[in-house]
Length: 441
Ligand code: UDX
Ligand code: UDX
Image (cartoon, rainbow, N blue to C red):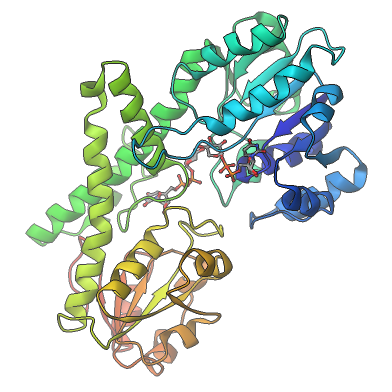
């Protein structure tokens, strides 16, 4: 089948490459000409495991092409996936829908003469509930046979290719059987491999995404709230999480305590959901999400405070090493990165801060030019008075505490992601602190 993917960011580039991989002819569209040029030569504009190889292959077969022209998109296919971003509005916290609207408004005028009978515009972007219905009305004014469906994505950065090709569910909100049938056809190889498709109305489909991300954020903040109680009682939040997670009704995933959630989705989605619920007069139904947000950001200041205590109460003239800049491992995405928020807060308190990350240094440097960066861990830790482990890249787990102790000024570590082995670090002479855990060393 032929389809277009409008917006080739983290979601769109992966979706376009995966759709070509399962056999479709795909045209990726973006307003960013530089990005389109990179993608055309098979280079992804960001780091995502497996994407580069898949992109190269799909471009080489000719099944995946790219353009900046919405007119060409309208002519190329009768199914258009909208994957542009929906960032947080800077003052209201609501979702900023201008890019979704620009994409649909930009495509609409060309649909009438595209020669296709039933055009389907499929939203994947995360939008406030009610957006799809509004876009459908707008679209029909321009092209009466055009229809809107909503098909939220649930992919996690760092395993986005696998999440797209082997999702746990596909959700399709549509107003007609034909629209749902077309999406079933597009996703046929995934459905044949056993992925369930849940067909529903537009509003429910929009809501599934917001409710799912809110639930995940709630799980993380719940365990971080428990870490605060552990700090006050001497209990150990890691053991608590493990014991809770063994209850199959609760489950162990998204119960990892520590620095909390960041990234382009969970923080902005809970704020946008709150703003939309308030607009609907149902603010009280999701009022708890404000607390989820507060608990989450509090873990950042708690981490800074733990480090400050370790350096004797003041960061002035102290060297601080930060391990991790990406908002999570296996990604170079630094959007709302808890690690960089902590690094910047420590710098503001007077320390010299040097940051290491295996993939995200370039992005971090352009967003935070005031921070210093190092390309290897030993360099970042040279003469450090404290080291903070803030993004749990697997290579940090493999670090040799003995070797690193010889590089730093004081062997003091804050493990804000709870993946280092306290026994190994303490045996090498380190003092190790973690939120909600006993003191080590
Ligand atoms: C996606 C979603 O679609 C968003 O709603 C969800 O909450 C997170 O994931 P993401 O892929 O992260 O967004 O966005 P981003 O990486 O910023 O990419 C958006 C792309 O759309 C960019 O390449 C941008 O140039 C492009 N764009 C933007 C257009 O092509 N047209 C526009 O009008 C605006
Ligand atoms: C999330 C959703 O998981 C995905 O379904 C949706 O489509 C987009 O938003 P993503 O933002 O890529 O995906 O990352 P995710 O793996 O959900 O992690 C989000 C943040 O939570 C990261 O900063 C991570 O470090 C943090 N996290 C995750 C925890 O602090 N504890 C956990 O137990 C899990």
